[in-house]
Image 1 (tube, protein in one colour):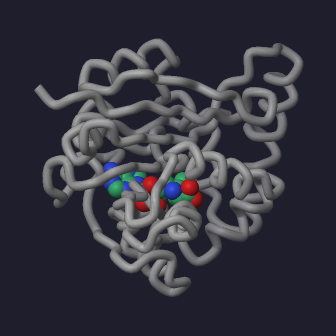
Image 2 (cartoon, helix red, strand yellow; image 1 turned 180 degrees about the vertical axis):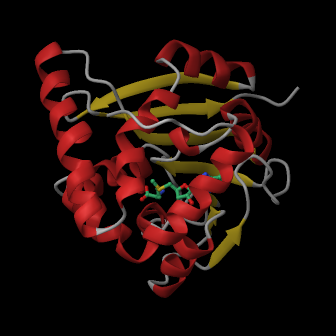
Length: 234
Ligand SMILES: C[S@@+](CC[C@H](N)C(=O)[O-])C[C@H]1O[C@@H](n2cnc3c(N)ncnc32)[C@H](O)[C@@H]1O
């Protein structure tokens, strides 16, 4: 059954506490639920940033730092940002990147045009106000800077959608409840309802100054990779 989804400040508090609780078991559950596919998706997301050595990369909502660790294969200048102290502690424990910052994605303590690229995995659904987060991404990225978001998606194909609904909507909450946290893994499939449709996401990104917004479907449309480039600053 779908969960009643929190909004506004209540959502912020709920999400932060939830990730603090599940942080120690997050990586194991993530690999299990995605059947290992998330590692491949994260490599694709970082590759889409077209990083050069010494590029400054932000892993927004870095969690335990998978994307930061992947970006570090290209450059040492990787900054992980997250508001969950629990998730940041895990990222620090595995030495995912040199700099970890505890902050809300909608209010980044980073200078204008200070980053060459930004990557963000599986967090769009968790943000309270996507327009504010996108505006922050645009502010901190230099003109020409690349952005890549990975997120779950709603498959177009009816058969895939039905199978994925059974797996993600029914089995994952049971598995997650047994192995980690019942609320968090019931929230996971329900939180897809927060995601705007592709057209709305493209408009929001374009409105704050991105161009060339592209979407690549992953694993039969169960996940997506969104990419865009920061336009010139007026
Ligand atoms: C599903 S996890 C993804 C972690 C990591 N990016 C990955 O791909 O494995 C979502 C992360 O977003 C973080 N998060 C959610 N809302 C946030 C916000 N408003 N500001 C900063 N971090 C946020 C959570 O603390 C959590 O670590």
